[in-house]
Length: 428
Image (cartoon, rainbow, N blue to C red; front, side, top):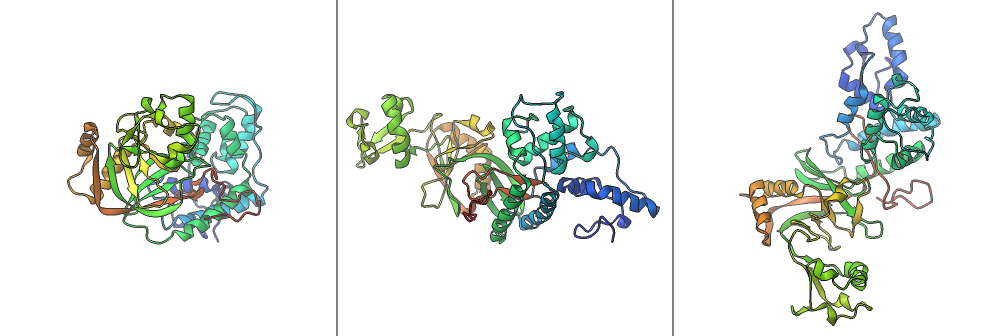
């Protein structure tokens, strides 16, 4: 059988290997060990092998890291299965070498012995082609390969080998293999029909996908729950939008945040436009409460709409028992961070107006982006019930692969994967 046939269904005698197909196979890390044998076989039979020796896979693969196919597509489990086969072979071959931690961050133009370690590491995982060699120079090929690695691992793709990137590089191959195996089970459990339109929040990736007819309509960076205030994993339906919302502070945040802040600064509530009411609707002053106790938890704290409102310009409601929701935020700088686990369980949405417009256009007549912007600009509270509810999936996926063979990993932020074999069963 031809070396490039089998489960991938690719045979030299059927035609040329396309640039896209070769890029996909290189992303899976299976071309390098096959290329020499395939060339020898083709030459011995007089075949012309159609790939260019100067094929620049690095730039093409950066484009392929983001796929228009949803993370929860019916085929994702199959893509993970192919990745598992590849990672099993990496583990059987001894895994990948460590990149020496410490030292100054390295970037393009640097010369350092650690660049050789980095090249070896990136070649094994398929981010850097073997032809790039093992020079100690951090050249454009290494820069592109490292950015690709960073994108696959949810890191800021700055091309700098800093502490966070080195930590991700040094997670052993057998740990990554276990991650893939755990997440294939998760994917199989969600392999049914999810809806023609739905919203998926992947908590470990801190990312949101709006999916329509099997394709991702838009992706949104998210900020999700802290380790000690986790975003719940659930399936629900989005039913309502609140424009220019008031924020009623949950009891847990009154206890954990407001009381300590008021003990530090008695003007905290005034500075943040938060008012206090008893449950009969009577407004109170902060002086009426003993802040050295938990008395404050007996009252309702409400933040007025405005630029400083913790919910931003819109809140997206879905059915759940945890008192969480999706919403805008005034703290938009958090979207630019690698680590986006800062909330108390709710999900903050980057570019929320695009998502809200899609939700309304999909279900509710006479709404478009212009009307969304206009309502927000008024500053007045307006509640909109969706004419048709949109399925929502708050999921926990730490490893997946796409049709181009690109394998993604994210930190097991809530420790549900049992990656290091502590004996705790991985939780779906």
